[in-house]
Length: 200
Image (cartoon, rainbow, N blue to C red; front, side):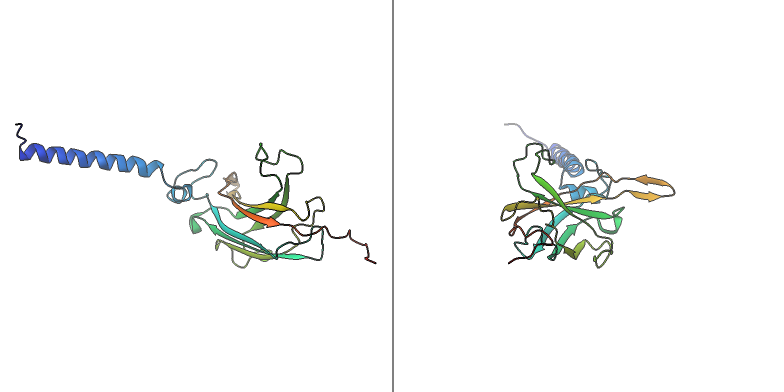
């Protein structure tokens, strides 16, 4: 029977603990969700450190806004997750209506499948209450004013965060960062009569 001395046993235990720490260090430096890594100082895809953001939730009310109704308005609420005061530039959220979620190109390559609706900023202007508070809550003119949008149709509204470039001393950095989007199912209302028409 093989006898292992206490010294050997201790050496084996310390070696195992050291290897475990190395593995943990390797995992922590290259894993984790993109937001946590970005806020920890990592560059994520086209985002500089601290630029990455996610749309946690979003809503548009009321439901079933009529397409092309220029008198209608919408209340838009967006909850964001960012690196807070460490994040450079201004956060901009684009809202796009997607009629065909099977679009193979994924970037609006199918004609008539995607419609830009809104571009909203967390900068304290145009109805946004507080700049950089990770909340956008604004009342806007009808985002479905484009009469080419399909009426009475189930769409997906995609809320996608972007960072503007951060400029100082005549030079700019960043401006290419796109974060994690949020998809909201939404059914459009009827097609409103064209402007200037009267109903009998």
